[in-house]
Structure formats: structure tokens, C-alpha cells
Image (tube, rainbow, N blue to C red; front, side, top):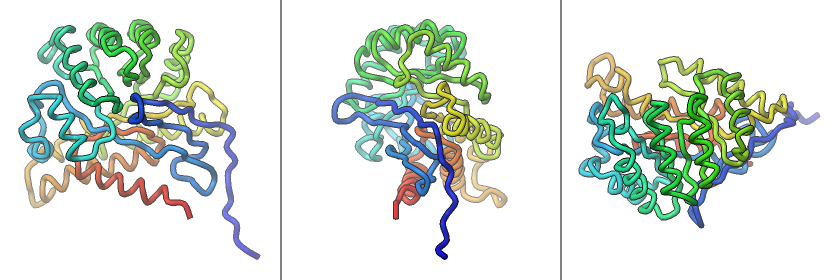
Length: 315
């Protein structure tokens, strides 16, 4: 008697979200199974990777992370073009670190001008605009970003309970997609999605940011939260959790002491350590249910792309 692999039947489906414009647009989500369980169902859209850039020269990046972008970190447009032309980035995440009141506290007009230049340079390729994390400042900046980049279908965030009305209304009016961010809690993630739906944000314009961390720094708790979100979406018919998941992991990985330390007998070579830390963190998040990763180092991205290709090969 032939052996048959036991299979689970899933009643839910992850909603699809389209990012970018024209023939360079990208669709994420759409899965009807747990991550890479292709023997049970489908993943019509492979997980995607965005390369991050900053709107100001990074201050605390280790040399291993800076080296691939030598000569372009003072110009976000040149940086974005290097990522796409030299490293094959299919989308870009512009981190607005300069707007932080504890950093440069850059004004709205100047910040929005940077976003507009980057968006125009990408010519339809998806752009993620990630605020500084200060609720009030993000509300000011991201609302204006939505207006100036009307119709470009940007992915805007982080949007939290404290500012979802202001940013959400702008995203609706100017046709952008929202990153709904909550602090590693299934119920809080669902609550924010309910609020966004009540505001009128279409389901096809919401992605979940469950908050993430690096390998060795609480990633198991992050994994558990994401896993439970995906389980509720696929097996419990929880429609307010049936959204693609985005993980902003590059900045989390490259700030920890293990990747900032130089070469040591205990840790080994610094560059290899950082690349592997980022790649391993990324793979764990993909296995937990991530649909879109924001990463930093080209070599780490290359490793993850190889793994995605291997795991999505159908027999």
C-alpha cells in the first residue's frame, strides 16, 4: 500500500496586496497554506525582499554593512539606484531616520522632497516609506508623503493605534497601502486591523507588521506571534488577520553587539557573522509566515533568495 502524506485542509486564505505601479508592480500574499507547505496547497506569490536605504548617512552601521554601499550613503537616490542596478533589488525601503526628533528632526517639507525624488527614480518599482517611529512626527510626515506621491501606491508605515486615523485617511485618499504595526501581540494586531477596516481602508491595502527582532534577541517570541497570526488566518477563519506580513529586520540585526564586534577568536570574522545572522533571522521569519522582508546586506539577501527558490520548487 502506497504511503500518503497526511494533509491539513485550510479554510482561510491570505489576502493579496499589490505594490508599485505599471509593469514593475509586485503582488504579495495569497497563500492558502502554512509557509512552504506546497504539498498541501498554494503560495501563488513567493516571499519578497526589499533592500533598505536611509535618508541620511548611517551613523552606527558596522563596516561590513557599509562596505557594499560605499560612496552612495549620502544620496538616497544614488543609494536606491545602486541597490536596483548592482544588487537586483525588486523594491526599496526608505527609512526616514532623519525625521526623528531625537536625531536631526528634519522638517516635513525637506523629508517629503527626499521621498519624492526616490519614488520618481524608481519609476514604478515598489517603494516602502518607513517613518521614524515617533507617532506625532510620523503623522505629519507620512500624511504629506501620501499627498505628494499620490497614485504611486507606496507602502506606508509604521501605522499604530495612536496615529491610524490621520495616516489612514491620507492613505485612503491618495491610494497607498498601510503597514499596521503592533508590539508582538496577536490581539493587538487584530484590533488595529479592525480599526483600519472601520476607517475605510480596503483589505487589499493592509499589511501586518507584528514587530520583529534578531536571532538571539527574542526572535522566538516574534516567531510564535507570527505563527499564531497565520494559524488564525488559515484555520480559524479570522478575516482580520488574513493579511500579508512584513518584517523590518535588517536594522534589528545589524544593531546587536554580535554583528558590531570586530573579529574575535570566539565570534570569528565580522562580515561573515553579520551576513549569517541576517540570513538566519530572515529564514526564521519566512518560516513563521513573513511575506515581505526588509533586509540590508546583499550577500545575506542572496542566501535568502536561494533558500526561497529551493523551498518553492514543486515536484
